[in-house]
Length: 396
Image 1: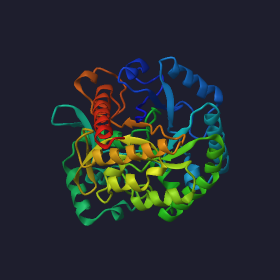
Image 2 (image 1 turned 30 degrees about the vertical axis):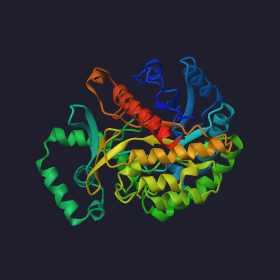
Image 3 (image 1 turned 180 degrees about the vertical axis):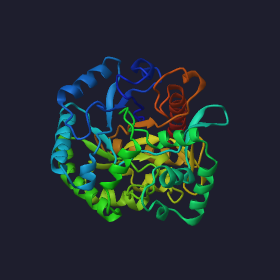
Image 4 (image 1 turned 30 degrees about the horizontal axis):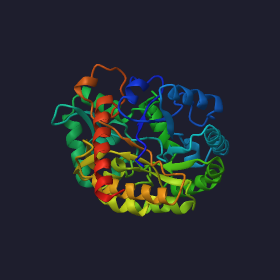
Protein backbone atom coordinates (compact mmCIF):
# COMPACT_ATOMS: atom_id res chain seq x y z
CA UNK A 1 0.00 0.00 0.00
CA UNK A 2 0.92 3.63 -0.54
CA UNK A 3 -0.81 6.95 -0.19
CA UNK A 4 -3.04 7.72 -3.13
CA UNK A 5 -1.12 10.56 -4.76
CA UNK A 6 -3.55 13.21 -5.97
CA UNK A 7 -3.46 16.63 -7.59
CA UNK A 8 -5.86 19.55 -7.43
CA UNK A 9 -7.22 20.48 -10.86
CA UNK A 10 -9.60 23.39 -11.38
CA UNK A 11 -11.36 21.86 -14.34
CA UNK A 12 -11.24 22.59 -18.07
CA UNK A 13 -10.23 26.23 -17.45
CA UNK A 14 -7.12 25.19 -15.50
CA UNK A 15 -3.94 26.25 -17.36
CA UNK A 16 -2.38 22.94 -16.31
CA UNK A 17 -3.64 20.04 -18.40
CA UNK A 18 -4.62 16.56 -17.25
CA UNK A 19 -1.88 15.17 -19.50
CA UNK A 20 0.72 17.21 -17.60
CA UNK A 21 -0.71 16.12 -14.27
CA UNK A 22 -0.54 12.46 -15.25
CA UNK A 23 3.16 12.88 -15.96
CA UNK A 24 3.82 14.09 -12.39
CA UNK A 25 3.00 10.58 -11.18
CA UNK A 26 -0.31 11.53 -9.58
CA UNK A 27 -3.06 9.00 -10.13
CA UNK A 28 -6.02 10.79 -8.54
CA UNK A 29 -7.59 14.13 -9.35
CA UNK A 30 -9.02 16.48 -6.74
CA UNK A 31 -11.54 18.80 -8.38
CA UNK A 32 -14.96 20.40 -8.14
CA UNK A 33 -17.75 21.66 -10.37
CA UNK A 34 -16.59 25.25 -10.03
CA UNK A 35 -19.10 26.48 -12.60
CA UNK A 36 -22.03 25.44 -10.38
CA UNK A 37 -23.05 28.36 -8.12
CA UNK A 38 -22.67 27.77 -4.38
CA UNK A 39 -25.86 26.24 -3.03
CA UNK A 40 -26.99 24.70 -6.32
CA UNK A 41 -27.23 20.92 -6.81
CA UNK A 42 -24.40 18.96 -8.41
CA UNK A 43 -26.27 16.74 -10.86
CA UNK A 44 -25.29 13.18 -11.70
CA UNK A 45 -24.90 14.19 -15.34
CA UNK A 46 -22.40 16.95 -14.54
CA UNK A 47 -20.48 14.73 -12.12
CA UNK A 48 -20.24 11.88 -14.61
CA UNK A 49 -19.14 14.20 -17.41
CA UNK A 50 -16.24 15.42 -15.28
CA UNK A 51 -15.45 11.88 -14.13
CA UNK A 52 -15.32 10.60 -17.74
CA UNK A 53 -13.04 13.45 -18.79
CA UNK A 54 -10.57 12.55 -16.04
CA UNK A 55 -10.79 8.82 -16.78
CA UNK A 56 -10.02 9.47 -20.43
CA UNK A 57 -6.59 10.68 -19.29
CA UNK A 58 -5.95 7.51 -17.27
CA UNK A 59 -6.73 8.93 -13.81
CA UNK A 60 -9.62 8.86 -11.36
CA UNK A 61 -11.65 11.58 -9.65
CA UNK A 62 -10.48 10.88 -6.12
CA UNK A 63 -11.82 13.77 -3.97
CA UNK A 64 -14.42 16.49 -4.48
CA UNK A 65 -12.79 19.69 -3.27
CA UNK A 66 -14.72 21.65 -2.44
CA UNK A 67 -18.43 21.07 -2.20
CA UNK A 68 -18.91 24.57 -0.74
CA UNK A 69 -21.22 25.33 2.16
CA UNK A 70 -23.47 28.32 1.49
CA UNK A 71 -23.11 31.23 3.92
CA UNK A 72 -26.83 30.97 4.74
CA UNK A 73 -26.01 27.57 6.28
CA UNK A 74 -23.10 29.00 8.26
CA UNK A 75 -25.33 31.81 9.54
CA UNK A 76 -28.38 29.52 9.75
CA UNK A 77 -30.47 32.24 8.19
CA UNK A 78 -32.21 33.06 4.91
CA UNK A 79 -32.70 30.01 2.70
CA UNK A 80 -30.52 27.67 4.74
CA UNK A 81 -33.15 24.88 4.76
CA UNK A 82 -33.14 24.73 0.97
CA UNK A 83 -29.35 24.94 0.77
CA UNK A 84 -28.96 22.07 3.24
CA UNK A 85 -31.34 19.94 1.19
CA UNK A 86 -29.42 20.80 -1.98
CA UNK A 87 -26.19 19.84 -0.22
CA UNK A 88 -27.64 16.48 0.76
CA UNK A 89 -28.82 15.86 -2.81
CA UNK A 90 -25.34 16.67 -4.11
CA UNK A 91 -23.84 14.20 -1.63
CA UNK A 92 -26.21 11.49 -2.79
CA UNK A 93 -25.34 12.20 -6.43
CA UNK A 94 -21.61 12.08 -5.70
CA UNK A 95 -22.04 8.76 -3.91
CA UNK A 96 -24.03 7.29 -6.81
CA UNK A 97 -21.24 8.35 -9.15
CA UNK A 98 -18.55 6.70 -7.02
CA UNK A 99 -16.97 9.85 -5.55
CA UNK A 100 -16.52 8.88 -1.92
CA UNK A 101 -14.57 11.77 -0.34
CA UNK A 102 -15.71 15.39 -0.01
CA UNK A 103 -13.53 18.22 1.28
CA UNK A 104 -15.31 21.36 2.53
CA UNK A 105 -14.75 24.22 4.95
CA UNK A 106 -16.80 26.32 7.37
CA UNK A 107 -14.94 29.65 7.10
CA UNK A 108 -17.27 32.68 7.05
CA UNK A 109 -17.05 34.95 3.99
CA UNK A 110 -13.34 34.59 3.15
CA UNK A 111 -11.61 31.38 2.19
CA UNK A 112 -7.83 31.14 2.61
CA UNK A 113 -6.20 34.54 3.13
CA UNK A 114 -2.77 35.96 2.33
CA UNK A 115 -1.37 39.49 2.31
CA UNK A 116 1.26 38.99 -0.41
CA UNK A 117 1.05 36.56 -3.32
CA UNK A 118 4.36 37.57 -4.93
CA UNK A 119 7.14 37.01 -2.40
CA UNK A 120 10.54 36.25 -3.90
CA UNK A 121 12.02 33.23 -2.16
CA UNK A 122 15.76 32.72 -1.62
CA UNK A 123 16.09 30.67 -4.83
CA UNK A 124 14.17 33.21 -6.94
CA UNK A 125 10.90 31.27 -6.99
CA UNK A 126 7.68 33.03 -5.96
CA UNK A 127 5.73 32.15 -2.83
CA UNK A 128 3.06 33.71 -0.60
CA UNK A 129 2.90 35.04 2.94
CA UNK A 130 0.55 36.37 5.60
CA UNK A 131 1.48 39.30 7.82
CA UNK A 132 -0.96 40.46 10.46
CA UNK A 133 0.19 44.09 10.26
CA UNK A 134 -0.65 44.19 6.55
CA UNK A 135 -4.00 42.54 7.15
CA UNK A 136 -4.78 45.03 9.94
CA UNK A 137 -3.81 47.90 7.63
CA UNK A 138 -6.28 46.59 5.06
CA UNK A 139 -8.99 46.06 7.66
CA UNK A 140 -8.68 49.49 9.30
CA UNK A 141 -7.51 51.86 6.55
CA UNK A 142 -8.76 50.34 3.28
CA UNK A 143 -11.87 48.39 4.23
CA UNK A 144 -12.76 50.84 7.05
CA UNK A 145 -14.58 48.11 8.96
CA UNK A 146 -16.45 49.67 11.91
CA UNK A 147 -14.72 48.82 15.17
CA UNK A 148 -11.81 47.13 13.41
CA UNK A 149 -9.27 48.61 15.84
CA UNK A 150 -10.75 46.50 18.63
CA UNK A 151 -9.54 43.31 16.89
CA UNK A 152 -5.87 44.17 17.33
CA UNK A 153 -3.43 44.83 20.15
CA UNK A 154 -1.72 48.18 20.66
CA UNK A 155 1.50 46.86 19.10
CA UNK A 156 -0.36 45.46 16.10
CA UNK A 157 -2.13 48.80 15.61
CA UNK A 158 1.20 50.63 15.74
CA UNK A 159 2.69 48.35 13.08
CA UNK A 160 -0.39 48.76 10.87
CA UNK A 161 -0.18 52.57 11.11
CA UNK A 162 3.49 52.54 10.21
CA UNK A 163 2.92 50.19 7.30
CA UNK A 164 0.04 52.10 5.72
CA UNK A 165 1.94 55.37 6.09
CA UNK A 166 4.81 54.18 3.91
CA UNK A 167 2.76 52.30 1.30
CA UNK A 168 2.48 53.75 -2.20
CA UNK A 169 -0.89 53.71 -3.95
CA UNK A 170 0.08 50.79 -6.17
CA UNK A 171 1.04 48.80 -3.06
CA UNK A 172 -2.34 49.55 -1.50
CA UNK A 173 -4.06 48.37 -4.68
CA UNK A 174 -2.04 45.15 -4.67
CA UNK A 175 -2.91 44.51 -1.01
CA UNK A 176 -6.60 45.08 -1.82
CA UNK A 177 -6.52 42.71 -4.78
CA UNK A 178 -4.70 40.06 -2.76
CA UNK A 179 -7.15 39.94 0.14
CA UNK A 180 -10.22 40.26 -2.10
CA UNK A 181 -9.08 37.38 -4.32
CA UNK A 182 -11.88 34.89 -4.87
CA UNK A 183 -12.31 31.25 -3.97
CA UNK A 184 -9.84 29.01 -5.87
CA UNK A 185 -11.32 27.89 -9.16
CA UNK A 186 -14.28 30.26 -9.07
CA UNK A 187 -12.63 33.15 -10.89
CA UNK A 188 -14.65 35.55 -8.74
CA UNK A 189 -13.33 38.22 -6.41
CA UNK A 190 -14.90 40.46 -3.80
CA UNK A 191 -15.25 44.20 -4.16
CA UNK A 192 -14.83 46.34 -1.06
CA UNK A 193 -18.57 47.05 -1.10
CA UNK A 194 -19.36 43.35 -1.51
CA UNK A 195 -17.08 42.37 1.34
CA UNK A 196 -18.61 45.00 3.64
CA UNK A 197 -22.09 43.73 2.78
CA UNK A 198 -21.07 40.12 3.42
CA UNK A 199 -19.59 41.04 6.80
CA UNK A 200 -22.78 42.81 7.81
CA UNK A 201 -24.75 39.60 7.36
CA UNK A 202 -22.64 38.03 10.14
CA UNK A 203 -23.20 40.87 12.60
CA UNK A 204 -23.53 39.43 16.11
CA UNK A 205 -22.08 36.04 15.17
CA UNK A 206 -19.56 34.72 17.70
CA UNK A 207 -17.62 31.48 18.10
CA UNK A 208 -20.39 29.83 20.09
CA UNK A 209 -23.01 30.60 17.46
CA UNK A 210 -20.87 29.49 14.51
CA UNK A 211 -19.85 26.30 16.31
CA UNK A 212 -23.49 25.49 17.04
CA UNK A 213 -24.35 26.04 13.37
CA UNK A 214 -21.55 23.67 12.33
CA UNK A 215 -22.84 21.11 14.83
CA UNK A 216 -26.36 21.34 13.40
CA UNK A 217 -25.04 21.13 9.82
CA UNK A 218 -23.16 17.93 10.66
CA UNK A 219 -26.24 16.39 12.29
CA UNK A 220 -28.17 17.12 9.10
CA UNK A 221 -25.67 15.91 6.50
CA UNK A 222 -23.62 13.11 8.08
CA UNK A 223 -26.52 10.59 8.06
CA UNK A 224 -26.89 11.25 4.32
CA UNK A 225 -23.13 10.88 3.82
CA UNK A 226 -23.30 7.51 5.59
CA UNK A 227 -26.12 6.34 3.31
CA UNK A 228 -24.28 7.58 0.22
CA UNK A 229 -20.95 6.05 1.25
CA UNK A 230 -19.28 9.48 1.26
CA UNK A 231 -16.61 10.54 3.75
CA UNK A 232 -16.83 14.20 4.72
CA UNK A 233 -13.47 15.89 5.38
CA UNK A 234 -13.62 19.32 7.03
CA UNK A 235 -10.69 21.56 6.08
CA UNK A 236 -9.10 23.70 8.83
CA UNK A 237 -9.32 27.48 8.72
CA UNK A 238 -6.50 29.19 6.84
CA UNK A 239 -5.05 30.98 8.71
CA UNK A 240 -6.35 29.39 11.90
CA UNK A 241 -7.44 32.53 13.75
CA UNK A 242 -10.27 35.11 13.51
CA UNK A 243 -10.24 37.62 10.65
CA UNK A 244 -12.29 40.78 10.04
CA UNK A 245 -14.14 40.37 13.31
CA UNK A 246 -15.44 36.96 12.19
CA UNK A 247 -14.98 33.84 14.30
CA UNK A 248 -13.01 30.90 12.98
CA UNK A 249 -13.63 27.62 14.71
CA UNK A 250 -11.50 24.95 12.99
CA UNK A 251 -7.91 25.84 13.79
CA UNK A 252 -6.73 24.11 16.96
CA UNK A 253 -6.59 20.66 18.53
CA UNK A 254 -9.61 21.44 20.70
CA UNK A 255 -11.51 22.62 17.61
CA UNK A 256 -10.84 19.35 15.82
CA UNK A 257 -11.94 17.45 18.91
CA UNK A 258 -15.24 19.34 18.81
CA UNK A 259 -15.69 18.45 15.14
CA UNK A 260 -15.18 14.71 15.54
CA UNK A 261 -17.37 14.61 18.65
CA UNK A 262 -20.17 16.58 16.95
CA UNK A 263 -21.15 13.52 14.89
CA UNK A 264 -19.71 10.22 16.03
CA UNK A 265 -19.25 8.60 12.64
CA UNK A 266 -16.27 7.66 10.47
CA UNK A 267 -18.04 9.64 7.74
CA UNK A 268 -17.52 12.81 9.79
CA UNK A 269 -13.82 13.38 9.26
CA UNK A 270 -11.05 15.88 8.74
CA UNK A 271 -8.87 17.14 5.93
CA UNK A 272 -5.52 17.23 7.72
CA UNK A 273 -3.86 20.31 6.21
CA UNK A 274 -0.36 20.68 7.60
CA UNK A 275 -0.02 24.23 6.28
CA UNK A 276 -3.23 25.62 7.74
CA UNK A 277 -2.72 23.96 11.12
CA UNK A 278 1.03 24.57 11.01
CA UNK A 279 0.55 28.35 10.92
CA UNK A 280 -0.68 28.14 14.52
CA UNK A 281 2.34 28.01 16.83
CA UNK A 282 0.27 26.27 19.52
CA UNK A 283 -0.50 23.30 17.28
CA UNK A 284 1.58 20.13 17.68
CA UNK A 285 0.92 18.51 14.32
CA UNK A 286 2.52 15.14 15.06
CA UNK A 287 0.40 14.74 18.18
CA UNK A 288 -2.71 15.90 16.31
CA UNK A 289 -2.10 13.52 13.41
CA UNK A 290 -1.80 10.66 15.89
CA UNK A 291 -4.80 11.68 17.98
CA UNK A 292 -7.19 12.17 15.07
CA UNK A 293 -5.71 9.54 12.74
CA UNK A 294 -8.86 7.42 12.56
CA UNK A 295 -10.90 10.40 11.38
CA UNK A 296 -8.49 11.78 8.78
CA UNK A 297 -10.08 11.23 5.37
CA UNK A 298 -7.90 13.48 3.20
CA UNK A 299 -4.42 14.95 3.56
CA UNK A 300 -2.94 18.25 2.35
CA UNK A 301 0.84 18.31 2.76
CA UNK A 302 2.59 21.69 2.68
CA UNK A 303 4.94 23.59 4.93
CA UNK A 304 5.05 27.05 6.47
CA UNK A 305 7.70 29.03 8.28
CA UNK A 306 6.35 31.16 11.10
CA UNK A 307 8.04 34.56 10.86
CA UNK A 308 6.33 36.36 13.74
CA UNK A 309 3.23 36.33 15.87
CA UNK A 310 0.53 35.37 13.37
CA UNK A 311 2.91 35.88 10.44
CA UNK A 312 4.05 33.07 8.14
CA UNK A 313 5.67 32.32 4.79
CA UNK A 314 4.85 29.31 2.61
CA UNK A 315 8.08 27.33 2.52
CA UNK A 316 9.26 24.36 0.47
CA UNK A 317 7.53 21.09 1.37
CA UNK A 318 10.56 19.61 3.16
CA UNK A 319 11.45 22.84 4.98
CA UNK A 320 9.68 25.08 7.46
CA UNK A 321 8.20 24.52 10.92
CA UNK A 322 6.05 21.46 10.18
CA UNK A 323 7.61 18.13 11.16
CA UNK A 324 6.67 16.49 7.86
CA UNK A 325 8.50 13.27 8.72
CA UNK A 326 6.62 12.88 11.98
CA UNK A 327 3.24 13.64 10.42
CA UNK A 328 3.74 11.29 7.48
CA UNK A 329 4.92 8.51 9.79
CA UNK A 330 1.75 8.82 11.88
CA UNK A 331 -0.45 8.79 8.77
CA UNK A 332 1.33 5.81 7.22
CA UNK A 333 0.89 3.87 10.46
CA UNK A 334 -2.80 4.69 10.33
CA UNK A 335 -3.00 3.48 6.74
CA UNK A 336 -1.39 0.18 7.73
CA UNK A 337 -3.88 -0.15 10.61
CA UNK A 338 -6.81 0.38 8.24
CA UNK A 339 -5.41 -2.08 5.73
CA UNK A 340 -4.81 -4.76 8.36
CA UNK A 341 -8.33 -4.20 9.71
CA UNK A 342 -9.81 -4.65 6.24
CA UNK A 343 -11.31 -1.19 6.18
CA UNK A 344 -12.47 0.06 2.81
CA UNK A 345 -11.24 3.59 3.50
CA UNK A 346 -7.53 2.86 3.31
CA UNK A 347 -6.56 4.94 0.26
CA UNK A 348 -5.49 7.95 2.36
CA UNK A 349 -5.58 10.36 -0.59
CA UNK A 350 -2.97 13.07 -0.21
CA UNK A 351 -1.96 15.95 -2.40
CA UNK A 352 1.02 18.31 -2.41
CA UNK A 353 -0.72 21.50 -1.34
CA UNK A 354 0.57 24.72 -2.84
CA UNK A 355 3.97 25.11 -4.38
CA UNK A 356 6.29 27.91 -5.39
CA UNK A 357 5.99 29.51 -8.82
CA UNK A 358 9.18 28.54 -10.63
CA UNK A 359 10.80 30.06 -13.69
CA UNK A 360 9.54 27.34 -16.03
CA UNK A 361 5.91 28.20 -15.17
CA UNK A 362 6.00 31.98 -15.42
CA UNK A 363 4.87 32.00 -19.04
CA UNK A 364 1.53 30.43 -18.11
CA UNK A 365 -1.46 32.70 -17.80
CA UNK A 366 -4.12 32.21 -15.15
CA UNK A 367 -2.21 30.16 -12.58
CA UNK A 368 -3.84 30.57 -9.18
CA UNK A 369 -1.27 31.43 -6.47
CA UNK A 370 0.25 28.27 -5.04
CA UNK A 371 -1.05 26.05 -7.85
CA UNK A 372 1.77 26.02 -10.38
CA UNK A 373 2.90 22.84 -12.12
CA UNK A 374 6.60 22.66 -11.29
CA UNK A 375 6.35 23.82 -7.66
CA UNK A 376 3.79 21.16 -6.81
CA UNK A 377 5.58 18.54 -8.90
CA UNK A 378 8.74 19.15 -6.85
CA UNK A 379 6.70 18.84 -3.68
CA UNK A 380 5.04 15.61 -4.80
CA UNK A 381 8.40 14.08 -5.74
CA UNK A 382 9.91 15.00 -2.36
CA UNK A 383 6.91 13.70 -0.45
CA UNK A 384 6.91 10.49 -2.47
CA UNK A 385 10.57 9.93 -1.62
CA UNK A 386 9.96 10.58 2.06
CA UNK A 387 7.02 8.16 2.05
CA UNK A 388 9.14 5.38 0.53
CA UNK A 389 11.92 5.99 3.08
CA UNK A 390 9.48 5.88 6.01
CA UNK A 391 7.85 2.70 4.77
CA UNK A 392 11.18 0.93 4.48
CA UNK A 393 12.54 2.25 7.79
CA UNK A 394 9.35 1.41 9.71
CA UNK A 395 8.45 -1.76 7.78
CA UNK A 396 5.08 -0.31 6.75
